[in-house]
Image (tube, rainbow, N blue to C red; front, side, top):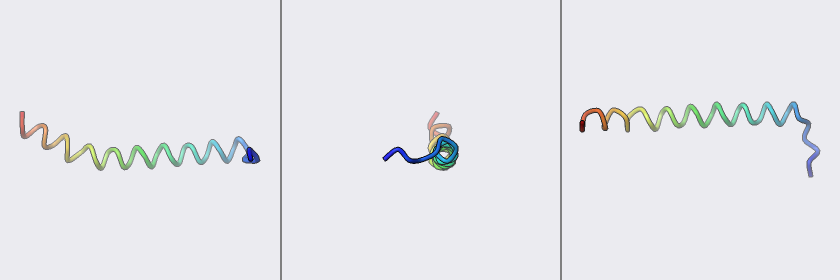
Length: 39
């Protein structure tokens, strides 16, 4: 089951982290803009 090498696992984790960060920025940007207009 755990036949994945540490190098590829680290690369996969980095890709997932960067992808989640990109999605989070795209989601948070308009939301933060709405909050600024509400305040």
